[in-house]
Image 1 (cartoon, rainbow, N blue to C red):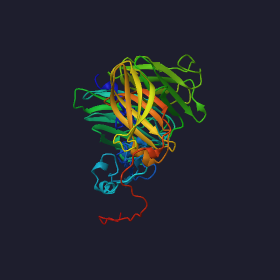
Image 2: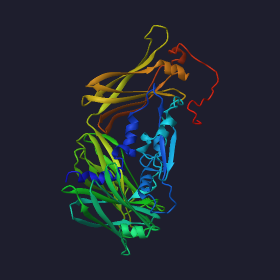
Image 3: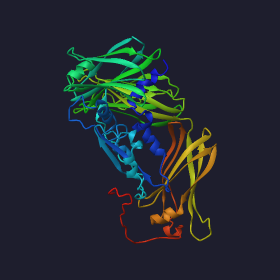
Image 4: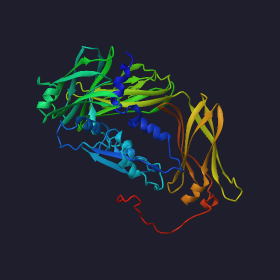
Length: 500
């Protein structure tokens, strides 16, 4: 079936693909810090669809994307995510309605954005702390998928439980597919019906990142089974895959899903956990499953159990657990975790989860530190921390080391290293940066991480916190700039007469 095994998984990864998902970015940020010689700016787009509340006919695609990614945001990346890293400047750019310049792609084409950013030459002292991830505004139903041919047809049902606003979405790569709903009371909802009833339903079809999307926005949708009808009106290839899902805004029933450990080594199980709940607490007696896509595209479905048998901790506590044991391949394992209510309250939910598997295991020990005076002026240019790394599989790894003083100032080193057997590695921290921070030691190697990286796959092999403490150096022992300016005043200047 070619691409079909990935359609279901990619649907939950959001319109920007796996790379912009929270799980992937968490792994990426874990392994990538800042360059002390670079001043960073993270511009957040803040687009407002400019619609009155509960108006389903007003820009439903934009409102859907904001619901998925988080608002305020640029329809793909929410503001909280753009501004999550503490070491960046944090400007924002706003637009609304027909002015889409604050959306994700138009941001890089806007002269107004360029004018806003060109003067950013300073930033505050950096710290690698990040903001917490807010809970999403939406929950996804279990989705449907299939293959469509020219003139073909598809029919199935989605269960919609109580919500004030819902989107039912059809995704496909190209051509034109017909898309019709039949509500639990038998009402047929098609684009013509949406045009005639804009107060209760909206319809839009559009392109998102080179693929087609069609959606219905529903206000106070009826609870029950909604029939989904898809037809192959214009199929440009011999066959194309498609997927349908429902998104419910702030429903009473939610699903949280995670991995016991997001990164494991080859041959170690990925343990999936699903936790459905409502206002009364955990939901028991549900049917829980996970569909996992391995790096080679193989699709596997397994049940998640609440029976108290390993790996499940306690029976009948509403926490569903299962082990995926086929982890011989290194790389990313993408998964859709689904839960269905088998007794009232009836519901269906699905969540995207990302795990990674490394080929190698590694141990780190024998730490030491030594200052270096490279120019023989009596001041230390670098503080070098060395350690031994032993790996089971030789190769190139990405290394991130973070040095922290007692005031929380951080300096980090990121580089690719080749390791075979037992290797001694060294990281050199800048002495002038230590001096400029003005904090005496000892200093802490607060994080030491080693990862396998291939394409968009990040598999963490070593993740040590507070791995080593240096000798109690004084900051005045380290090198400093020959020219230092202290005091003075600042005078704002408007060089381009734009009022800024």
